[in-house]
Image (cartoon, rainbow, N blue to C red; front, side):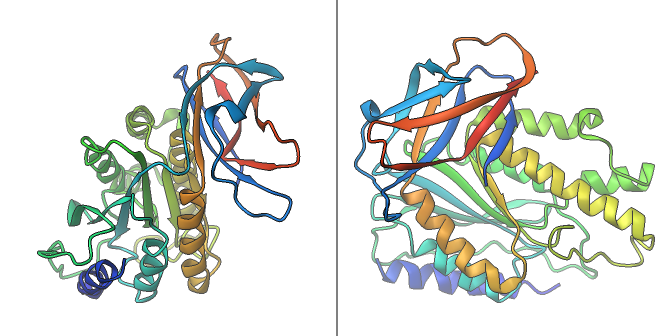
Length: 325
């Protein structure tokens, strides 16, 4: 497989620096975090609000706001490319659209993964006019294309790259979500394990949840948008559908657990505007967190409502429900 996209991303980085859905989540931590976007009646974003402007209610009861970060604050964003899908030429346009939304106070890292995570561009302030020594990762060419990648482990490794970053943190990853662990399940069982029974996946889920870095998936090739599998690997239609659904559900769980989102492009033409919108939304959102008065485990969903002082303003929030098992 030829990784033409990696060479293209090198050019993209240089050119860039030459320029200046509602989710339900199950958590076992007492901290509940979410992001909010505030708009006026004309859908214009309001970005000058303070901590005092926000209130959070859980099942109608006011909660203490223990964490607040303004939309004006610096953000550290990791743009992560799955080699299995990142060789599409359109991905370069999508990356350009997203990166063009970053502000001077933001910081950027670009990485790619297959069985390993490799850095293409280390943390840089986007205000730098020209980057030097941009080195794309040299992934080995393979005699035959890989079916899957090491996505879960790469995401865990990616969270450690934020160790010295002090601003808001986000991971934006384009992927088909296929991980070799799920492949092994299919070979052994003929179908994916249910999420409660998948101990290995739940270990990854807990690790990424504890990192408290939202993961925003742009999910290609799932059962929601025309996933294709090699007929030699999955000749049975039922088996193919079970695999693609298992892949998608696991990405949804990861997005929910980390406070991120997942988007399913209907076709490649949706990817560029989707990236642009995601970049803009991240730049105007507030980060909020609270510790609920009642932390007693209860699987019943708890309703979250974010309010602002001015009742005429509209609030979009990344979560509206969660539960404590």
